[in-house]
Length: 61
Length: 138
Image 1 (cartoon, rainbow over the protein chains, first blue to last red):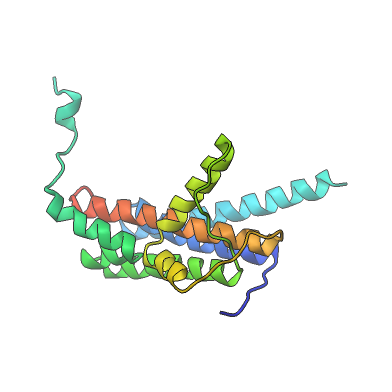
Image 2 (image 1 turned 180 degrees about the horizontal axis):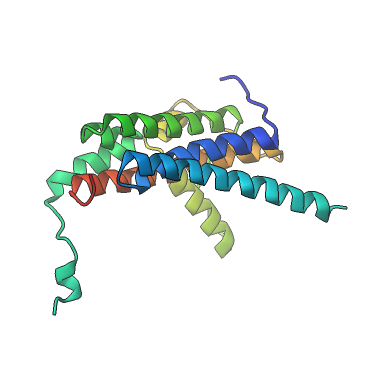
């Protein structure tokens, strides 16, 4: 199996994508709500990713 | 006044939900496919299988239960349960001899987390399949 070398951002992007798909599918009762919740969780992951990234960047001076 | 027990929906016979639950564990998304929720089943299967394969390609480590202090036991047993929850993906990986030691490095570490998270997401999919089979959800 080929080896995959990803940056932090790429790995976090894939993690957010896969997790959001599953959370969207399993949590709501209609397809419309599932799509909205999947997009919402994906955006939440990204806000956290950039937010924590900036905090770590500023914290290191 | 209704008691707490009366409010809870009764559990259908085990024969109605156990096959979906078991297939959902063995094949990610399989429980939904069995219950004819094809679109959702395929989405779950794609997301969980791709996450697991990415974890393998990043050379993530698989957990084994270990004895020792409480934290070691919790981390390794919890990780093992997470890995095992991927069903056939985990079994195939072990049967085919995948044996990646836990080495330092961000990519390996992400890989390990991808492998465990794929199993944890499959547990969510199994719970959803159970709720559909038990007619608590469409």
